Amino acid sequence: MRSDICYLDNAATSWPKPPEVAKAMCDFLETSAGNPGRGGHALARAASATIERARSDLARLVHAECDRRIVLTHGCTDSVNLAIHGIFRGPMCRPACGSKPHAVVSAVEHNAVLRTLHCFEEHGILDLTIVQCGEDGLIDPDDFLNACTKRTTLACLSHASNVLGTIQPVQEVGAGLKERSPCALFLVDAAQTAGHMELKTCEWGIDLMAIAGHKGLLGPTGTGALYVGCCAYPDETDKPHLFCERRGGTGAVAPGLDMPQVLPDALEAGTMNAVGFAGLSAAIEVLPTIDHAHEQALIGRMLEGLQSIDGVKLYGMPTTAGRTCSIAFNITDKPARDVAAELDQSDNIAVRGGVHCAPMLHEVIGSGVRGAVRASPSPWNTVAEVEGFLAAIDRIAAG
Ligand code: PMP
Image 1 (cartoon, rainbow, N blue to C red):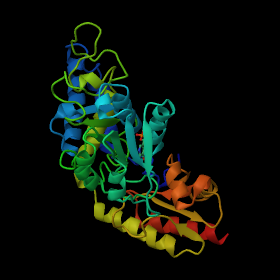
Image 2: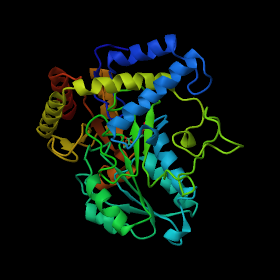
Image 3: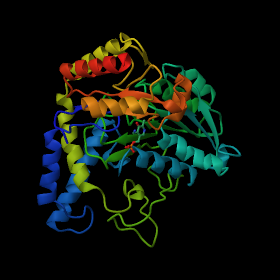
């Protein structure tokens, strides 16, 4: 790999990772790499401690009531699937809520949510309502809440769009949901906000929050988490709770062939990615040192610079307010993937062209199957890199 790469694809996964991440992962492999939860010897205990530290770090990050309400996963898609399958295949999907369960989502959602819910809809298990957003990618919380009814079992919203960066009003939805839909659980996909902003699960009325460890949290790929609140998994295990499709050993003792009933073991079968979580804990420790003002300045300059180039169409919010780092645009009628390929090959600039697993949003903003070019800077980028990116866009637009 050329070391002078200008990496602007942090919405896909963050890079570079802080050096502490690789060091913690190497240290883990050399000194602690037993199987977490399996066995009482020193290496198994060290691996368990690594897992529990990551759980505790994540619990603090999302203001969870307690550590055991953090279920560790392989990434945000894994977390979303765990939540949705857990609801619609299990006792949470109870008939008392109406004849057929109902789910409400926004058009902003990622395929992790859309494809999973579509599968249940296609099998006749639920009715799905998709709430539209404006061209800025913002949903109206009243529209969203008006779509929720007494038989709504799940309301699901991306905290921020992975295409436009638009931050959604999750607090307003969380505050109004249970009044309209007493049986509904509120799932927030925080793939694009964890590490970028404070997340207050309980205070915001969130029942389930899906997190990726490898994006804004700066950890390695293959790490993620699902926050599971008290409504989604009550402490009393004779109450309806999330069903776990994945079954197997957890290290905890459970009678017979049933899974353990208590969190997190109830939803965590199989050997965990302990080396990945060693890296994630190290990354979380670095988060408070991040220069967010510098990142905001880079985002502001990119937005301003793109809007001043003839032939560039910028999508979404034109200023830094109410958004994260994802910036989407097109150049005249050039295919987005061709622009991304040219930036890669001619300029060693990494961006992503296409629909970014969010096809409905591209319909709303008018970019359809062509999609858009997405550039997503990080605090590690420099002003010179952003100027180089804008110069390259200027050249492509002129060519
Ligand atoms: N949701 C959103 C909003 C995302 O941006 C992504 C990643 N592109 C995902 C879910 C899936 O996350 P992961 O790659 O960790 O499975």
